Length: 183
Ligand SMILES: [Zn+2]
Image 1 (tube, rainbow, N blue to C red):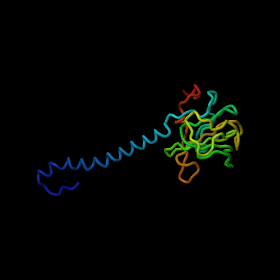
Image 2: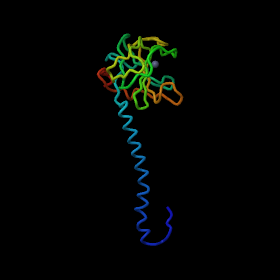
Image 3: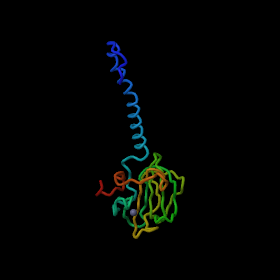
Image 4: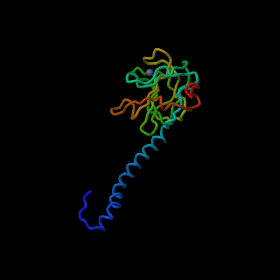
């Protein structure tokens, strides 16, 4: 900060002026961060529902750089439900080893994808409710060797350039069907 002259009255007012000009952009940054946090909480709360309607299901394989998803093992035919409210953006078969699958947009840039379904029940465009709408059933379609749900959490539309997956495990921590061992 340059002091243009040595006049005592001007120097004495300088700190206040300097602080004001420093604070305004700082407050804008804080407000932007707070707004982003609120948007994130509104769309898909950090507390997301267990996506299988059975307390007997369990984590059979966790997230790693070679497996960017969680595998939840359950009896074939058990209902699969969304971990958060949103809208279906894909439902059907894909030859990507995922078999019958459903993708959900949660409205805040986050998406979830549910793979290896025995069958999908919803259709693209359908609004879905956290833990309530039945997306399909647990199966082993695609490249699965046994009945389980492979669930992915995406930042950005699944498989698009610039999108990436994060570990869903930290988010899936609540809901009617959360097995007691994870409560
Ligand atoms: Zn998997």
